[in-house]
Image 1: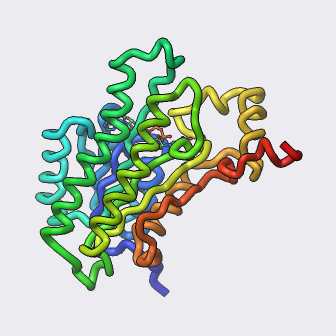
Image 2: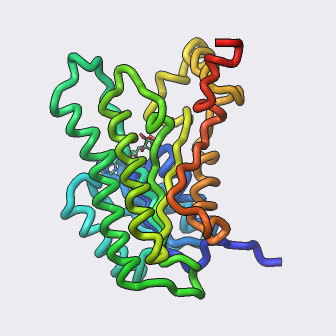
Length: 269
Ligand code: NAD
């Protein structure tokens, strides 16, 4: 029996796809049948390695360098996607970074950088994707929706995070950006949702897991007792991008091993 490919004939852009969660999401979308633009801002060789894996999976993948916080570069990326693939069905707005700093020491540059990439970058990519979804509308042989946007948020859209005020603010912003877009665009059959990862083993948070002591301390925050892997997020992304989740609109899917269950209260507070 041929393998079921829930994203067959679909075209996707994954931002920040040369490492970590984005890399895993891009590969999973490709294996699910999508052609994928692998966006990166640095690390061309790593992006090309992701593209190679996608080609092996039968996906017509391309790597494209663009800074998601630069409007002209985002527009050029979508124009290239349109030229190469004809249209776009799925955006995974994943690119993000941290500039951790005690609040009193935080510079305006450090604040602006995190908001520009994590929040404005998602706005710019989602706007470009929305314009294409509205132009094309639903093609029922491809998907029940006119398009799907998945915003990569974080448990820190809910959990305050000392020393990371810029990052937590960007993720709190993504929550209401996602919900406002979802409310406005659902009548046009555009589904906007978010994934809120907990602690996932990637380059963004190496110091939280790369020594036994750090990992032990981290695990006290995770009821399920293990650190997350990029593949845990990738499986959620494939589902949210597919018609299997066609009635899921404006939801944040927490993939966090229970981190948002306030585990500090599990022994009577
Ligand atoms: P990562 O550092 O491996 O991935 C982030 C990617 O974004 C990198 O490839 C980086 O080059 C790219 N990027 C940074 N600035 C960019 C820009 N201006 N334009 C385009 N790309 C840019 O870390 P990750 O953990 O895979 O992070 C991916 C997303 O997941 C981020 O939005 C992050 O906030 C979110 N997240 C991660 C965790 C975790 O525990 N790892 C938890 C919650 C949320």
